[in-house]
Amino acid sequence: MSSSPTAAAREDIRAMDPEDRRVILASSVGTIFEWYDFYLYGALATIMAKQFFGGLDPTAAFIFALLAFAAGFIVRPLGAVIFGRLGDMIGRKHTFLITILIMGSATFLVGVLPNYASVGLVAPMLLIVLRLAQGLALGGEYGGAAIYVAEHAPQGHRGRYTAWIQTTATLGLLLSLMVILGVRTALGEEAFADWGWRLPFLVSIVLLAVSVWIRMSMAESPAFLKMQEEGKVSKAPLAECFGQPKNLRILILALFGLVAGQAVIWYTGQFYTMFFLTSVLKVDGSTANILLGLALLLGTPFYVVFGILSDRVGRKPVIMAGLLLACLTYFPLFKALTEAANPDLARALANSQVVVKADPMTCSFQGSPIAREIDFTSACDIAKRTLAVNAASYANVALPSGSPAVVMVGKVEIPAPNGRLTAEGDRFEPATTVAITEFRQKVAAALVEAGYPKAADPAKMNKPAIVVILLVLVIFVTMVYGPIAAALVEMFPTRIRYTSLSIPYHIGNGWFGGLMPTIAFAMAAGNGDIYHGLWYPVVIAGLTLVIGMLFVRETKDVDIYSKFLYWHPGRLGK
Image (cartoon, rainbow, N blue to C red):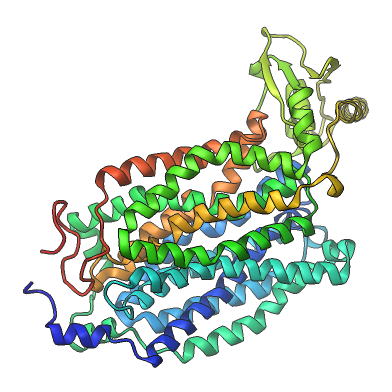
């Protein structure tokens, strides 16, 4: 292959001595700390909703808190463009330092932000600004870490080496859960919810100092150094990335044939499960953290297992198998999770169906992230909002136009009131407030009578079963995520690899994956079925499975130092 380095040069690039292994380990440890910073917010979403979105009703506040969490993911592709370009032009190491400084500083500042009660709307605005800064930094982090490790790895072992980078995301989440649990236990639930939640953010300044020290000790990627010595560093990586139709085609295939499905499986298995346990199944936060932490601890080694397996059988078979298993089992697994975590709720769902009967033209979308309580004035909206706050799953029955809305809890029928606002339009009229309060009390009493619990009973939880179910969900994550770094590195040439890899990865994980908890929760709130949000990851993963099986080629045996890797659909190499 005329465009490849000589055999001697390739051997020089790929040689792995103890110093190289130390540098790769340092890269992984630094990435753990960076993911810790990013995941704190996700683990504390319920508390953040109360602290920073107190002007909204509980359901809208939680959705808005998830949307603020997602804001960091929305800008990740922009971070990929900015830092991917820097990584291809100035090198991997210096880009690492910039991203971790931005992320670490933003995380520390979250711990000192005033809350909504202190400064009103300024509080959520400042929070979102910091979330955006974190997202930008993370957009440049992952691509550099994956490429850095892959370009040190010997041929035939990239799956195994890059799988260690994949473990850092889960280990960072696990570390954040451990710190939260420790602070929560030491302070007590009331103090933690009031001010103690700030401590895990403030502690991150220590982790930032350690991470910067580790990053400073890292050497530059040998592949980038060789390219730099030969004067082949790209001066316009974005133009090369998007200006070459063949590279753009592979970029699109990487997004829709690999990353989009991987992303929704990842965020379902490691984030939505936490939201589902605490907000829907009403498991207390400490118990949910411990159970998910155990599952993560048991499941993390499988990243390396599937990374090694991908070196032997290929990246594509492992990733596609994970997508298929998730599509086939998500609904039964989450129903089993309900049975294990809150059997009273599972029994109530089966035996005492809740129904909302109303004129559908009077019903609004309950998943709106900007809605306030007074924005829902129709009887249908008030009925659904009441059930959503109580985490009650319900069915919808359409009535003729003009029909009054009613809630059926088993055989109990409760008419829903219409809301009337004051002349100023900023609150309900006193009579309406009384009527809504009485309606909510009747619904709550009927739900209790029908067996719907206010919280999961710890004595009735089947904790081993919960851990096993969560572990299965985590193993699906390791199947799709373990080999993905190696697969993406192998799809693009060294010259524009940082940019080309980062863009599909962060569009997939930032938009398809990062928005998953928000979209799924809003879908469930709008439909009434607590499992309805699972259609989002199932459909996205299913589409990725089809596209990946039909159009994505295997890459495990490519020479990542060749100029051309994957341009031609029928063959690898030039």
